[in-house]
Length: 343
Image 1: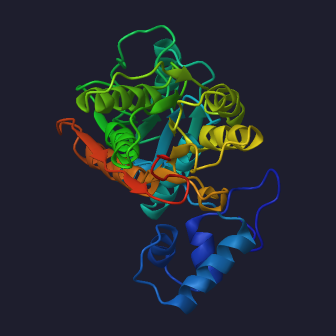
Image 2: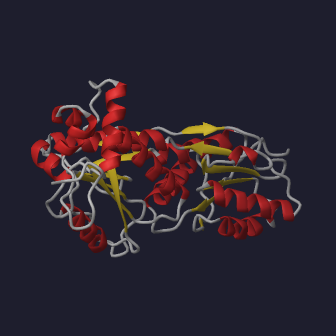
Image 3: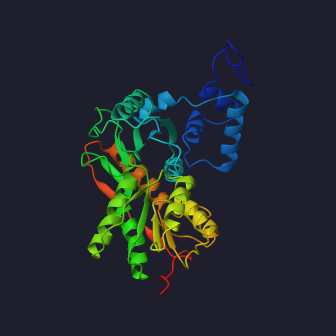
């Protein structure tokens, strides 16, 4: 028989009936508290929770899953934990999952190949998860077409997955167009671009849109400069651009590279925005505290996370629902790092 003060090693695991007996309530009330249902008064809920803690009782998640058909756990596959965008996206996904009463099982993969993503997906499919969100910031190193084996429902964040998957992404092309068009509207006749790495989908979308916006304005794009998302790479390119008198405008593919470029220009004695205007991308925490405060493109990570979880749970409820793609608009935040070029 289970002791009312909990179980010792080797003794029986405390049951729902034990909790009910100690709290002086019915097993149905314990079940309602375990499942987070609202139809229990607060005094009774507190008494049941205290009894659970005293006994060391843990609800049987597997039994609940068999009854409801749901584990209330979402898997997340990420190709990198190193970028600000991915970290903020993961935070938004996890926050929305918790609001929807789901736990999150994170599975990062070190090398962005189709094989590694498929392997992580298969491992998740064997776990007690209802579905998976794949934050696919990086292009596959093996250049393979994105395809997953049959398994749990999935939503992909980043628009490189193709039409066969439910996709949620920031409108990367819109953001780059907003940044480039803003600099052109100020009177700059050439906009240089410090792009993200070749392995990044978002970097590719931003650079393609930058180029397209310039060509649509009748401007031949200058050579693209390749960075790696770090302030160091922005600083290196900022030194090269800052030594050229014909450079008046720079669009960096993220705020950290913009910060590095601004530092280089300051060291070279080039005024921002008096000599060179700079636009970033992300609106990272602290962008408004750069000197000068950074004009940048704001991504709505909270909406991306919320939509990805909602769409995944819709697919869990109805696996036959057709896939779709949702792009979340960006906003241009104009601050003091941009101005018309000097006459």
